[in-house]
Image 1 (spheres, rainbow, N blue to C red):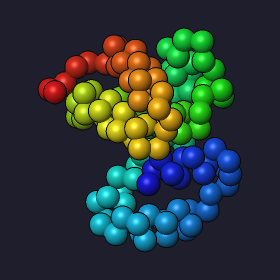
Image 2: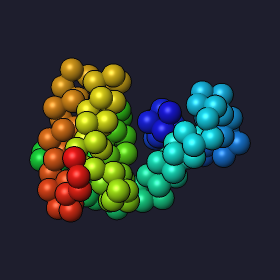
Image 3: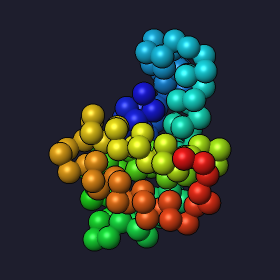
Image 4: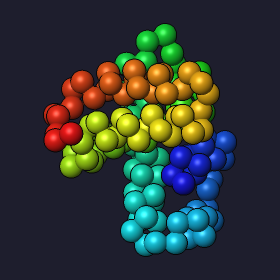
Length: 129
């Protein structure tokens, strides 16, 4: 759900908080899932400049703006989690991002996401896998 909202945010940065909350309430229903999706969404939006800068540093021959919107937002979620959720193992973050890329991206998306997040994760303290 956070990916869908970030995709929408790319095209309309004026998402109303009430609309976001209604969207999450209708689709997720469980309070802990809603909180998690809001944490991802708000964290990515608040730290987007830092996240995009990190992506630009590691994505060889790609500007963030040129990336496919799905790939860009999957990567933003992955980088946010790598930077801000130290209790989540790196392998779990990358595997989940690859699964999102498989489901919503192109045939090339999983490999692209994996390669970029591997480079971002190289500097992260490795937790238990």
